[in-house]
Length: 206
Image (cartoon, rainbow, N blue to C red):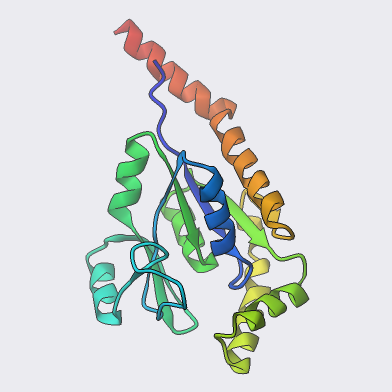
């Protein structure tokens, strides 16, 4: 029997592109993925729940976790820390379950250094105008912060080459279907299946 290890999938992209919306729609459809909730020091937005959307931590708590090496990535973005707990990710992959991370671009690049075998998906807006409209329509940012996020988004889009796949978030269902196709195809990759199959054959012969 093939002992299949889980795959780490990372969804990333500029702030305001709709990562959270896509992640929620994906999990409404898919039950095989395990969502790794990120930690952050930013304040909860309306409707967000601690332990569901993020683990909300104080700056002091977060910095202690950094010192204890309890995060597979962390970044400071527009004045707030974001990070991913290490223990949950490693345990879930070892159990043969896929882990899905939804994180900012800086964090994704750190994960790429720590988990180069991960599958990195870059979510982009149809246009920068569409991105600006989405950020403004949140109603949570000042004009200065909107401009800061757009400047950061342009820099982040330049980092697209670090990713394995690019998905345009023009329509939610279409973007979700593409991500589901990526997940399915990664489990059928020759190099991944061959490695697991050879290990199973060796185990049968011993």
